[in-house]
Image (cartoon, rainbow, N blue to C red; front, side, top):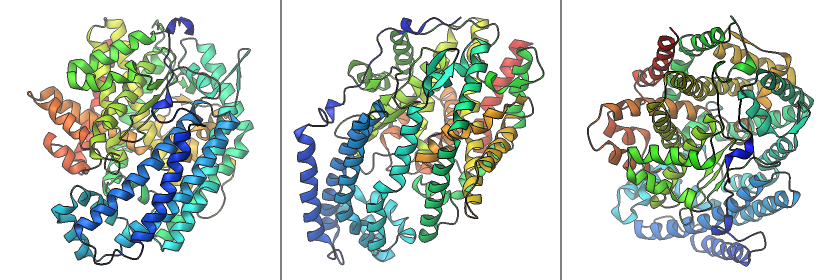
Amino acid sequence: MTEPAHDLGDLPNWDLTDLYSGINDPKLEADLSECSLRSASFEKTWKGNLTGIDAKALKQAIVEYEAIDEILSRIMSFAGLLHAGDLSDPARGQFMQNMSERATDIASKLVFFELEINQFSEETIAALISNPDLSPYGIWLDQLSRWRSHQLSEEMETFIQEKSSSGRQAWNRLFDETMADLRFDIAGQTLTNAEALNLLSSPIRQQRQEAGEAIGTTLKENARIFTQITNTLAKDKSVEDKWRKYARPISSRNLSNQVEDEVVDALVEAVRSSYSELSHRYYSIKANWFGSERLEYYDRNAPLPDSVERNIPWSEAEHIVLEAYETFSPKLADVARPFFENSWIDAPTRAGKSPGAFAHPTVPSAHPYLLLNYQGKTRDVMTLAHELGHGVHQRLAASQGHFLSNTPLTLAETASVFGEMLTFQRMLKDADLKTKKALLAGKTEDMLNTVIRQIAMLTFEINVHSERKSGELSTDRICEIWMDTQTESLGPTLNFDEGYKYFWSYIPHFIHSPFYVYAYAFGDCLVNALYAVYQDSEAGFADRYLDMLAAGGSKGHKELLAPFGLDASDPDFWKRGLNVIGGFIDQLETIDG
């Protein structure tokens, strides 16, 4: 039996005053006014005057451009975090929309800058990149130049910028607020999205079944609006992709991730070819643990039948994660500790709060914030370790400055997944055989969710966006695509009911960040390979690892992985990462045998 949630202790709530003291903070209005004046002055000074500019003058312009953008990012970080704390509060939603519109108006005056830079000849760009007077912005200039063939006219880019708050962003907000307002009737209780999904890992089978059925029923009742949102955003992306001349719907994501299409293709192929050996095999084993040849979908993440899972109080979760970080590197723990010592984490589950978990970097002049929905499960401890890894990464990379601190998504999951692995190994070390089996099963399932499930969701996205080009998709057709990719990835052991086919509709990544999901699989396989190097390495690995995190977005994946002897463009790289999952399944078979 699971202990009641009130045994979790005092859960932290974040304090956003390090950004602004509140909606009516005078500093907020002052920053907006300052940005408005500075952007107008920037436009007057530099628009049409970049031709023939030398490296020192260009650096001066970029520094000012970056400073304005950082202030706007601080404002939007505050508005977004405030909204995430209670998506059902109309005042917060209105505030976020108003801030988005004002920030968009200000930023529209700056659209010309990157466009005019990318009109320089390739020779001029190359000379500027190599000029030490432009340091450290030569890296930013090089990254900017990769977009030049996909940029439109200044008039078109300004139009897209100004329209975003009433277009794509408005549909994102509609999804978030609709999802936050949904309630799921389970066993006489009315639960939020996060609470209902949490019951899918309950030790009580009836709770899992009732939760699965209630989630399917409620999502089906709201499928029309989610279908409309999905179709609209897919069409919106298709139109923009056509104008920008992207070869495939995923191409813009790969470009922003600074990863080649063929590397992502190799990852997808490697994972899909491993379905039978990994997920199909594991779920067959798990069905046997449940005394059956088949496994109900709501039992997929269930605790083992003979396991007894207690709720882990927050203070214990903090101790476990920090000790795991400390054992690897005292410096890593030092960077992580302020998240707990200060109010940088929002942990409780509450009505209206954004479901799931995330780490928001905000801006280098402040610090990241973590959002969790902590409910005391082992998986919640792993989520804490995961999001704290993001936070540590973001803090270390802040030294690169506003433009270069953001890590491409392909490497953004490195510190988070590595933090999970450190925490898992810490919990595994002192476990008895029964607990070890439960931990191994939980870790295997988390890795299957991170690798297999995310690539299945990527395949779903690719198919939806491809078919949307030929016309609007019905709810039934989207459900068919979902079930095709789910049955292919999870295997013949899984049983699905009628309601499961609507589960695609609650995934926020499809709405906010199309094709984001492969970054999880990329990160997990990368960390598996990286952790293997760590286990075999001599002294110095931790320092190299921290240097990699501190590089932020200033280097690509090839350069960052080279010190560890790893290369993501090598097909065997992905097999090496996937073999770690297979090894955990082998251990479980040995224990079970």
